[in-house]
Image (tube, rainbow, N blue to C red; front, top):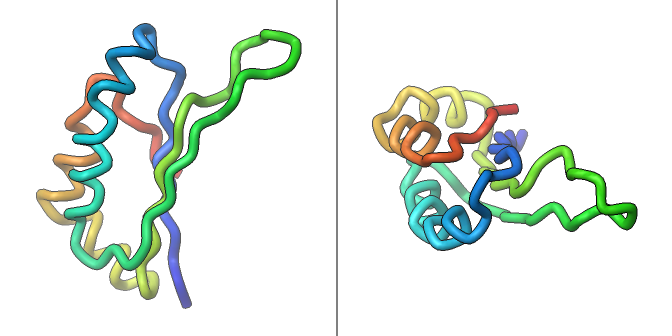
Length: 91
């Protein structure tokens, strides 16, 4: 059964800097072993102007739980999950 891991990025203090570094982060996520598919999304502002609960998300899809479990032990995973100034929450 396909397994999905989602990175959730909090609202950055400097959105322009985050966006400038986002392509690199996306490429690092692509290098995580076992990833079959990736989806990325941006949380749009609320109509009332209040802060959003998150800024961006990256979903990584793996063929099964075992593949995802192996992926999170790799250097590529560590480089992706901790190598950004606005490091994600992992869900």
